[in-house]
Every structure is written in structure tokens, then in C-alpha cells.
Length: 89
Image (cartoon, rainbow, N blue to C red; front, side, top):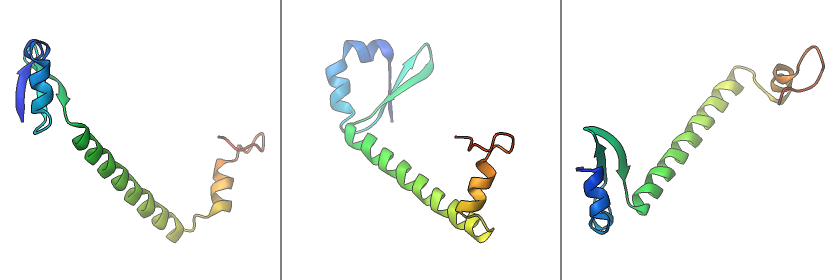
């Protein structure tokens, strides 16, 4: 991944935008990484991968909960405030 200073990014925005179509670019300010600029396609790829990973995690947790006896009734009981009888949502 290419790395450029924040000043260079400001001065050469058009070139930066061209570069990120091919590869991500790290922006540095005062010798610290402060941002990564990526193409919309790369952003969408990462977003889809994160959603898919979360979906798999939710399915796995749901299966484990069901194996351990979790169902709608036990969940509602867990979420119910015993003092007021109202669900905590």
C-alpha cells in the first residue's frame, strides 16, 4: 500500500483519486497514519464481507443458543423486568 503525507494528498487530490482506483493509499500526518483512501468498489467489497461475517456469527450463536435450550419464551423471560413486568427494550 502506498503512503503519502496529508499535504501531498491535498496538493495532488486528482492524482490521489486516480491511484485509489488501483490500490488503497495511506494518508500520514506528523508521522502517523490518519486515513486510508480506497475505491468505492473496494469499500463495497469490504462492507459485503463484513455483513457476511456478521451473518455467519449470528447464525452460529443462534444455533448454539438453541442447542442450550434458548427459545422465544426463555428469551422473553430473560428480557422481562421482574419488578415491573415490562420487557426491557
